[in-house]
Length: 231
Length: 258
Image (cartoon, rainbow over all chains, first blue to last red):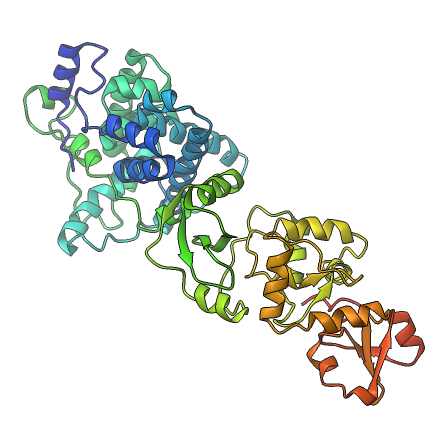
């Protein structure tokens, strides 16, 4: 788990300039993955999947908000990626930045799905579809994470799609701003404003909507997300 | 953001960073198929399977050719498997599918109906193309049945080698005519007797004790003693002589929708 250090990553990004796609954020195995794909599409796909399964699934989960939808979305994104790669020549594959490319496919699929979903009746409330427990996680850790995690995950769905995508890619997926700009096909300035407005809205939502907190707030007080935050 | 400027961790961004989740272990199997070499009645069998079941079987291809053919048809990643799916090796050994699931996504409705019909032909028996067409609900589409069987993604498991021409010839096969003949002989189908019957114009065999008429390879037909065997060219001729079609091999109407 990478701990996000906003100040550090921004400083690093600023010092390297807009071309510094590898600055800040989680380390990327892009070159290794692209080389493996160029050598053998099927063996390379296994490398691609290994490198990005967590990134793709986390992003899908926090964009959709529901586990089952996230599985569908992540599987569809990987499959579309493979099908696109079949049509690419070796040079194009070798030049690929696989992480940004995969997440572009994922976010486009998600946005198209939103358009379709808008014409369907809404699914049940988020609380009806809790995340399955992670068996590798201790009970106490899970309980603690569950408190803030459940609330935050719920608040994310209240953001506009553009803000949600930018905030999730920056702070959950841990991508540098330049890479988010490539994924969302937006100028970096626009990405930064989506992120900061999204974060501000999350703080507002947390402050003004106690309904979003855990089912029994008296028993399980949630941490104050606004502590030390915006003035 | 004041908190970050002062160096204190921001609980909001820390909370967001904790929202990552690893992909469930089942996710990869929803995307990629697995490949494995298996023993069976034909040499060099390779099989691809997904979380839905066995999707593709080919004989006599090297690994690259198999991967290329699979990719052209399914456009899905193909990764090595540690072992064949449960039930596959027995199904190939016995010629009976049992509970082995098949992944027939990507086939047209007609192709799937044809393959379901062919899957019902028991080991050691053959049926004409017209029978498959009737069972698939398209009695006039006899030629299209041939094409659909030619596209059978899982030969042997769906025994399209048990579909033969009613003029006595064996007809085509995905792996070639000689392989079809070898497979049928391996299942103890008496091709010489079948050819002799066809040459005499006998496509159906009835018993004058039961008054039931069958395809010659039907298990019930093979039990008829020579003294009581009656040959017919058509079902109409058998029915005119007072015979009714067998309910096992169904030379007449297709089985009612199950």
